[in-house]
Length: 163
Image (tube, rainbow, N blue to C red; front, top):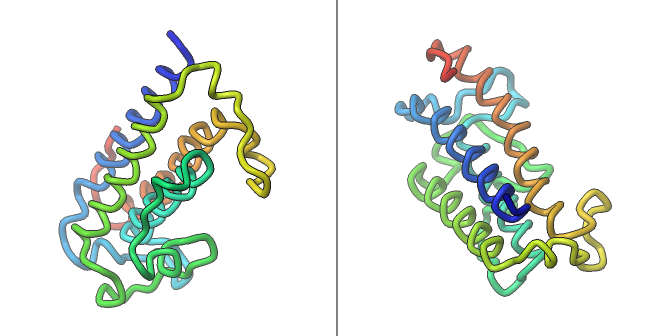
């Protein structure tokens, strides 16, 4: 299997697991439940995944970036989630943003051959993202890291384990 295909499979599997984790978040209060006042909640996670994918897109094809006004402040690095659901756009809007950004990231990957994955990222990129392949690898492990937080939220809300 080519490396591009492996990355695509991992991105799809990771997002599939994320979607399964989020299936039980059906009540408005579930989306903004925090284990403590500084903790991330599911709605922040969803927005954060979209903002992160948008950043990853910017490292390869900046013309394909798209982020609604205020999303960087609500969901970007250093943002602080709030338990006030009214402070956020609608759940469906944020979920749609997350999905659309992943679709764009996957489309970019589809257009890259294995030889292009070694292309360096632009000047000023994070040190741990030196080339195009690492953009996709980072998207995978970053989402997995935050899925652990969602797993803990699920447990505290009394949801059954996904696995």
